[in-house]
Image (cartoon, rainbow, N blue to C red):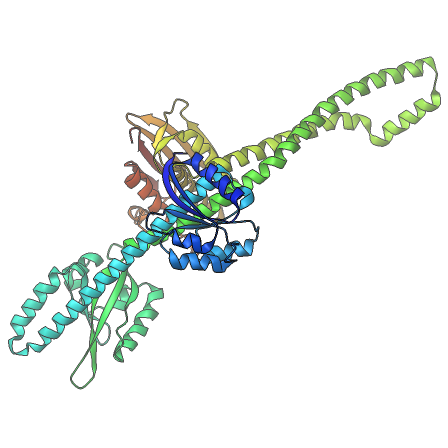
Length: 561
């Protein structure tokens, strides 16, 4: 793994553990500045803005348990904290992470690969969380500022009744230049005015939307929220709320709505003025961050399971090979034994022993054992070999890879992904591969590209599975091929499923768009795949589909990243 600089604080009262961790970090990071404190209070004094990570033991001379973590979080909430404890307590680990720790390690697993991976992930996750929090705070501050400006403008314009036409013109000029959307609703929730920015968001002309109710554009689960908010505004409440509307193109648009209730002189509710901010990208970022955290957790789990399975599988395989060799030798010995028995019969000696041997051979069906035992051992070795292949694929697939692009064997990545995803496709499809043997390595973010392959293969299996539910009994086919094309490498993943309807094929890469049943899909998989291939790798992600015949996804990645 690439060595990076690191400034870290280790709060630990056992000098041997501190020395071990220092040796590990000196191997994995360069240059390294590691501060060591043996008590909590000493450690808190060492906290400053230069720190990149804090490594914390929960049991210290002056503090114990989760209280130790809470004090460090109170002092250094912006710094990622990794707990390294001597206690193998799953509940304690869950509580520590729930409170705010980025990860939890036990001291008996302090190995360079584990420590390096955990610290890098912890710093990356904390950086993403801090960036998201900062972006959210700035957005909220901006929205509040814009809302106040808009409210002040509205109050001022309402007071200029003597020059209504001039005031209206000024009002329209100002609101049309605001970068956020604005709408006016009457008391029944129908649009009476929308600025150009909001019309652009929704994709409609003003003539198409005037008089229409906002409820008609809202996702069904948000309609109850709209009704509740309207009733609250009738009583003067003006709290902000999230809303999802459907654009003219059928996409989902997430908005943050900041309303201002309007009342007549007699106190009668007349409607609402609202400033609306497009937060679709923020929602996608939050979803991607959550997805990344889930995948990271699954990766940790898969790597651990693969490691645990690998050891017993290896000694079972070694013992089985020993059994195979021993049985071969025993069968050879039995052959000699049969010759001796035949000779003894001819010499007419040892008749009682010969009778006993023949009875024993009949009881155990010796001929059957001699024939079947080698076959059983061979089948056992074949099964163990398959387990070893699955374990190897899991370990390679779950490896996080570098945060920088590095040459990747796409053929190997695809083979591992096919093995990892086998449970998704083996009951509904056969997988056929045509991988170019001379395929050059491609500079990639390995973990993210393998996730793209997994998403598309699983989608293909699920599409074929849907066809099987509708009456087809034969297994479908998933075809995977690679080839070099000029300065790019092309990967094709095809299936003979039902295909994608022409009406929606242009929307499959849109965030949150899905045709799956509720609870079966989030609409993030292909959107994230598109971002990885196109935005992060400057490649192409294309789709060819014919309804009733199948779908092919084409991934092209540049050889010179």
